[in-house]
Image 1 (cartoon, rainbow, N blue to C red):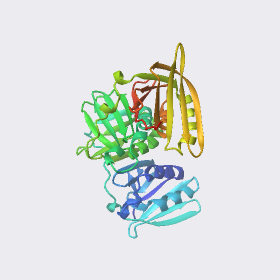
Image 2 (image 1 turned 90 degrees about the vertical axis):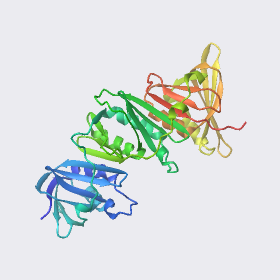
Image 3 (image 1 turned 180 degrees about the vertical axis):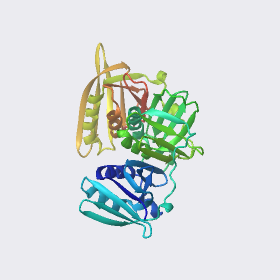
Image 4 (image 1 turned 135 degrees about the vertical axis):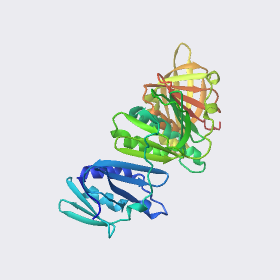
Length: 381
């Protein structure tokens, strides 16, 4: 006999949902489209990997016999999701590499692959240094930064998020050539080593999704050879390969305070609504939205947010603003504006601009830890 384990259907379904995102879908290596199920110190361990990223999750189970099997992910997950919410009995027949699953009135046999063929997943080592990061801040930061990572693979380094740590400050940054997002996190940790690496944004987005159930901290662990990084939680580990190459020096893209000639403060929600309305017309016009920033003598200034399409028409929203400096008209990609305004938690946002052909910078009022730079769009007169 091989593995004999029983667990609850909802725990199993949740565990499969966690690791399922790492399953290799387009892989030429057949075993990567499987999920490894194995007993592990009185718990059931589930694991999946596509080589770039791997996720391991442990769920509570009663283990009669130790063992394991790699089982086709889709068949397994689809089946478990349809089972009734009660006890699931799992049994592996070693001779035939098959998994017998019984739950309520259902019995299924799924053909699998020997667990030995499944890639070895990195695990935290006793001597590895752990950098604990508060989970709520980490999830918020990933949300604020990963939006700016490149979606296409033409420059692989830009599909990643740069993570650097030095003297108690963790900095995450992403840039796709059109915008840049940077967040700085001061950490209280006894972690003395400085490091710098670029991690796929996709992995971080998964980490943010999975860590929702985590109570306090996610530990960042750098295994010895440094080609991987491990994020360790109570019942889940995610590892990711580091992207090779040098991340661009993004500090020089951020407009220096002395070059910002106009500072405009508006209500975040008002600007977001105006941009969403502008997008209705802008999507037909290369996503261009114009911000016409107009200071007024002795009164609050206004920002006119407008979009125009030769096919569908135009619209303009007027928002009151506190403006320091000269009036300016500048155009941005409205999608980028919407994405960044969606992740800013603060009520007000400052837009720093200089000339129509120079980048704009957005920072939440009252939170200096976040900086977002957007390249302007060219507007013909």
